[in-house]
Length: 425
Ligand SMILES: [Zn+2]
Image: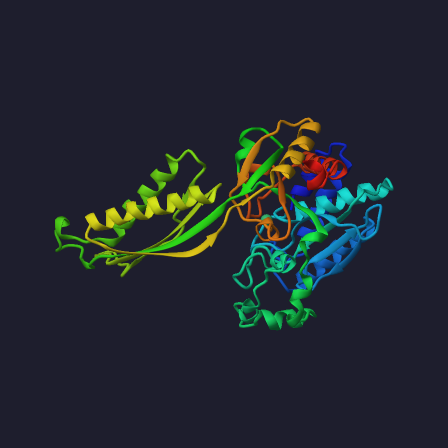
């Protein structure tokens, strides 16, 4: 990839940013295929990436090990060994044909920050742990946040029977990887061991770029509701059935989609809605569609707002179906609560951002993150770093070295000035 050359050519003297970018490239080369980046849970690439990350952790003065689900865990002791930790982390699995920065930026930046403390011989009144989550994206077993759920003690053992595309169950895959499926519970941590969970991540959206800001303070990880809608009308001959007598399911779906878009566009509370899938049957040029299925993905910064929007949208599409004499069935297929970032942590992130000379700008995360699982055992905070064009889950995903450096400096400042919740209030 030419990106590395461009970055090297445009080098600014920023030791952390350069180290981070070069490690991003090294980790990005560990892939199932040589032409694009795909690194999936419990594969040889997972293993190779874990070994690489653990060796960086070792160089940064951390004790590193692989936990019972395949997460990499590094610990940098504080002034007194055995103290509770500030946990930093992100994931190192990828989607298929991924970008290099989604996940690894947070993990590698955290390691670079610890390495900087270690080089200066600096110990803090608390320990720092860096966790690289083995599966956040959920590509292999269609179940997300497996790594962070194991750490939070909420790993659901019923998923062990889930099979991947080639028929290998998670149980078998864990054994092949050298882990014991009956001891995933050993990865769990308890609340008393953690002072907070803090994650730096690329924004994966265009908001920071549009405001010319390198860094954002995350307010919440937006909850999501996914619905599956099915409209049933009557299939018929495209030539013989007069327009007034038709019960066209696809035309009804089109009206529903426009309505959903309109409702979200006019919402002022940050509601976003997407219809990303539609299928009409029988699906022939000369047949009036008798049935249409589509999905709806709704997200908002608060649960109250999202739930109100779901009710509103269902009511509106019910009215459309009724007027068009279509039968409507709507099912909730997925629901995630909103995870607000803890105000006391958000305040410390904002302080660090300001102290580094950047304007403090708050924004919610529309994408899901490991904090959604970690909130069960710790208060969660997040820092966003600008990414080019807001592009993510794509090979063109890119972060400028200067922005990676800015993110690292904010994180390092935050770590060095970190006050646990009791002292912060
Ligand atoms: Zn991610």
